[in-house]
Length: 269
View 1 (cartoon, rainbow, N blue to C red):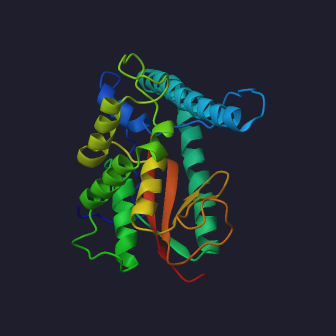
View 2 (cartoon, one colour; view 1 turned 60 degrees about the vertical axis):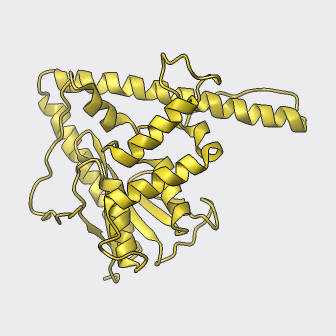
């Protein structure tokens, strides 16, 4: 898909979901996540430790789903209520602060932002752009369609690596493990990654990093400032390779919607 480089002088549009459009709102919030985990206390032994870890993963998945539901309700309430000048001013300030923080990190690491269209495919388009710059793919190969297919294929081929982090849809009675997707839900998830405009997030970044065997660094205005996905070294590293995929992650650039941009190499000034 061809991407347009948005001029920095033009204000970014605010995407406001229609409260009656469940699909759009779900797409906007599908990757919102929490890191809370309930503590499971067991006697420490090899078998109990495995059970404890599996229980924590299942509980965490369910907690993430519930948190998204709460945030979805809050977002609908926000956009269905009358305009609040103070709230709008706060959002503008948060967006400016976010851009400032990300720009500071980019300057430190010799990176310059390349704007990607906010169309639901932004993660995949940003990764495709980076892989072209790295010479790993030609421009004709590096499309969001190809990136979606690669992510979906990798996730589908490694269910044990991804299922603990993909919570089941509440109300479904086909799941045999509370909080985890059933096989049919997992197939549908992979189908949506491949063939819809649903947003990509952490699972898809991990899948693309491993599929192309390339580290992916995600710069954000938060902690940690750079989220690392390195198939050879994991996430615990302070070394950043210039020949990796560099992305920026924005929570406020387009109002409610999360967004990814590509970060081109740019010599420090």
